[in-house]
Amino acid sequence: MSKAFRKDQIMLAQAVHNHYRCPEEFLDFRLNEGISPDPGYFQFGPGVTCFGRSLKSALKAQVQYPLSDVLPNVLVDGKQLVLPFDPDEVIDNLRLERYNSVQLRRHEYAFKKIYYWLRPFTNRSLRSFIQKLRAANWQKRQFPHWPVDTTVESICENLLLLSLRVSGADRIPFIWFWPNGARGCVSMTHDVETVAGRDFCTQLIDIDDSYGIKASFQIVPEERYPVTPEFLGRLRDRGFEVCVQDLNHDGRLFDERKEFLRRVALINRYGQEYGAKGYRSAALYRKAEWYGDFDFSFDMSFGNVVPLDPQRGGCCTVMPYFIGDILELPVTTIQDYTLFYVLNDHTIDLWKRQIGMILAKNGLTSFIVHPDYITEDKEQAVYKDLLAMLTELRKRESLWFALPGEIDSWWRERSRMSIVKDGNSWRVIGDGAERAVLAFARMVNGQLIYEQADAPQEGDSGVSSVLREESIAAGL
Ligand SMILES: [Zn+2]
Image 1 (tube, rainbow, N blue to C red):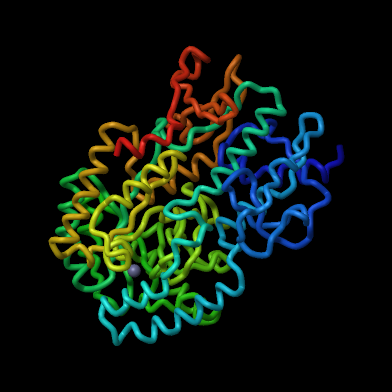
Image 2 (tube, rainbow, N blue to C red):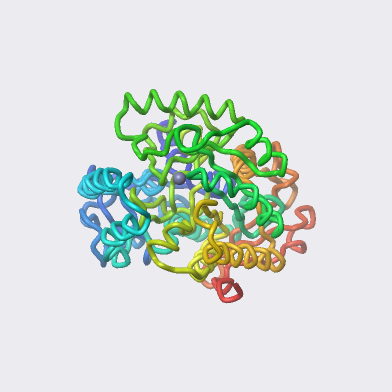
């Protein structure tokens, strides 16, 4: 066929291809020519809510269930799948939160103005009361899915299942998501908000270390507290990572383009000064369209599903993804502040539920715990419960506990690796491939399962069955 056609085919499969890093020949897609020029909501399989262009008859302007499911509209042309939507477009709409309606954005803006106007004058309990008022009915919202949304993973899985069906292949090789075949990844991060938080960091390092866990600290460079090279050095000397958090934490970074450019230049300069690879905005404010101006390797300002945060939404994935050249490491669990002061919950039950759901998709479990909010015994006990539970989990499951900077390095390496034919089987090649594990996706009873080849040269005999059961949550 023509060159243009080849180009379409590759573009259409890119997000799915990057998710699995499988040989491109297994992802043969073409876009149905009858799709509408305007976007809307639809489903791709049960419970998989999508936003983008698709068949006009299937689209709704609002998330109103039931949505039309376009899965039965996938056509087969020889060994090629004719899709009723562009997976790259829909996955981008989710990851970059382009599904948020204009109305919601206006609402956010009004709320933010009130919140930040009140903030200097109010104490924590009044602020959390305001957040609760605003959060009323949040649990009725079905999209993004609370308490973890894995829509992007589900889209990729459904497309791989369809590919298995039409290709006639009994398995599709891919590069396992984490180094050395780890089932999932766990990352702890601490945002330092105030002088009290900064002064608690030394103690927090001791607490983390006593559970064998290292973390990254996100430091606010201006106005909040003095930052000395000695302080940053102390964190690093103990094996912890330093990242930049916002500029002055006033919540206005993305309000206005010209002021943003002034601030981002300073933020980038602090990044260099601190030797930091990573960045996070105050209160998880974010604007993907402006990320090209950041001079960082990775960002951690997108939440997986954040109905209770000042900027609502969610990137609907538990995997890292690229926003231009920046790698996004999404925050996939509830923040300590929201748990303690908005939900009034002093247990680790919700965190356990989230870990179970994330691991069921072999994803990244990432936490934000502020030194500022765990200085008191009651909250500190909850945090120690979390660390103890993670330590237990680590004994039973092969999990990769990693600093954000290490995850960034791995994901970048993996994104440049590829799979080549090697006799009867396949082999992973590229820098860092010695840590990579070859895996296979297969269909068993209509379900997608993943297997790892723990000894690639032995082919089938070395395949160990892995981990798709949701029951891990029960074992927590
Ligand atoms: Zn903060």
